[in-house]
Image (cartoon, rainbow, N blue to C red; front, side, top):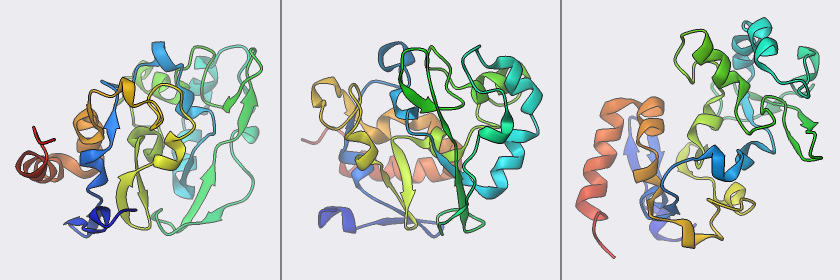
Length: 205
């Protein structure tokens, strides 16, 4: 982190890293371009979110394609990881599987790069992110040690929207992630950040 990024904002006890206003990003997430590459390494979620997913086990299985793992016993890692950024203090990761093209990816990602959790929620008339782990929704934003920031480590591995491909950037992470930020911290939180962005960053080189 640079000195600039240590000058965190504060919103209801959540620290906000100014990096979200300066790190570049593509116009929007586009599965047709990247194939959901950011899903390839799975995701950690709070241990208490696992039952939320399993409540919809039957519908998720019906949504999966033929190559995906239908046995829910194989969807999650066996051990919990201590992590204070999760409400329970414990996190659990999704497992990986090998796709038809030989690529390893999250068990919930299908062969065309779509998330079967999100597809299942939409099919059931729920909010599209109702059964999707928070850190999937947030990417490229993340929370590390109580700070809302950019997942630049993950970004280094990506071929389209990653930090090594600035030729694809058209605006900041903050500008790209309006819907996601509102979902995570609410409209009031987003408006707080928008006011700060417009005052300090918008249209400034």
